[in-house]
Image 1 (tube, rainbow, N blue to C red):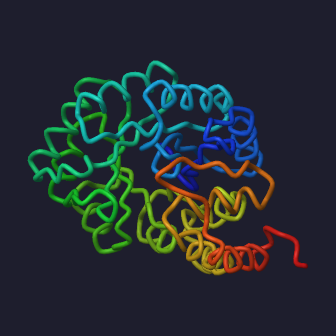
Image 2 (tube, rainbow, N blue to C red):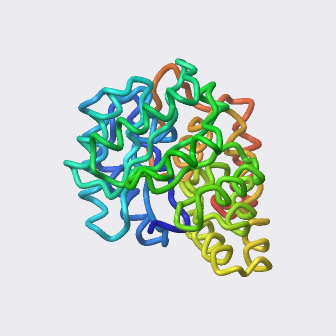
Length: 294
């Protein structure tokens, strides 16, 4: 039962776009030290859309090896081609992932029955815990609560990352699927309220740069300590906002570069944070104690 602050880990790259394996391993160690509860490797924030199959598998293998069983590793294995999703999920199981996160098939715009059959096919093909991932703002399709309810009856579909930011949606899924079906926020700005309303954790972009504070906030919310959770979340809110000043993971990779944790590498069609946006994010990072105040 994976709970708490789950970092949607960036994939560090060199300036030429090659994966920086040394930095990747260092980030995993840092997250373990900082108290992050679990890692998602090669999710949206990990630039899954621009990694080839072999790279995708290699990143998951490296993260699993670096974690050394200290915290769970969830592999991003979603695709808009069901056979590709099955292949990636099989590979993740082979390489030691604890669970898989599967985004809804993007661009195809499948109906609800298509979504149900897609997830059912992957679950039947690969015996590993699987987490649904609904982010209609990116995928142009919405996995509705009634479909989630149907899928929750599949034994190895254990939860959902709900990234709509709609707390009523989360409550409805909980009512339909029961307390044992894991609910993860995919929206940092509303994650605290999501957990206080019965969610089990946050698959977080903000945790990339403020892992200890995100872990503490999630722990407080899970314990029902709303006052402490609100105090901690108030300190994180500027990051929740400005790490999305441009399309993610552009801002968070730039922020990690400013912190000296990764090189300034990102793959086309994404580009580095615009010069116009840099002063605002840099000032937010200073306010949040991530950079020295000059």
